[in-house]
Length: 384
Image (cartoon, rainbow, N blue to C red; front, top):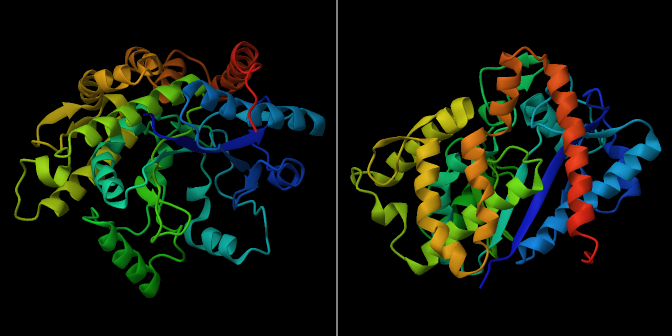
């Protein structure tokens, strides 16, 4: 049985020249499937949870086509790929709702470090203890998914030195998040954070992976992976999602697949050692993505992100094949071979293209790709 999958998609809007323009106040008033972010330059839409990959693909594409048609009605506007303000302006915050006190807190506390675009992948797991195990496992492997998705090597028209500038600068909050040993542990920890003020509300847990549900922390029903940069290519997004789902299927069939049980590292303070490894690997991947040399949580060995992903791919492929979705894993091989978006953009820059030209080409390519995909795949399928 396949797991349910839903996405929260943050994107920038702007001109075909790559200039990012804040239009969210107009968009959210006219399109009911979009919600505003604190800064007006990006908007978010959420897909309903589906198990079927073909249906998910159309659920991803339909809102974008609605958005593109609406942007055209406003003028010469479009969707801008990338996860940071590639061409600027990162020194100013453009409030989408000046009267919202939580937005005021966000601006005053974090500034434009949070004005990024990303993909949050939600996978349905109803058993709270199984969900906690999944969060432990995926938190230790979350850097691999960032390595596949990195798409933010520029900011303000400059090369930053990071493949995911977004994750390098994003204010992970609270600064220390434990590996939750049980649902009760998560409840008690969350209540304590709200009491002491390190979290302003139950959503104010900005880590690479978190348990999610309609009444957090008490009623939970999904794992939310928040680490990925914006994966503008829907086919690549489904591949990364399939890799995640297959790993979770493997975990469900192999209950011992748990960092707190399977790691051979020093068990004197294993949980804290694993947290330190995860945090370090996240930073290494933010800088070098697929080429980063990481520390494997199982035995402490050094391994590149690319080689670790290749190992993981081979390990989980049978679980995807058994359930009929292994074909959606195949684009992982292309990403490993050709590089992620950030690496492709940096290669173009090294070959002499300037950053505006790279972004402008990405704008055109993305629009055409979405148009082709929708015409081929989505017409027979009705998506609410």
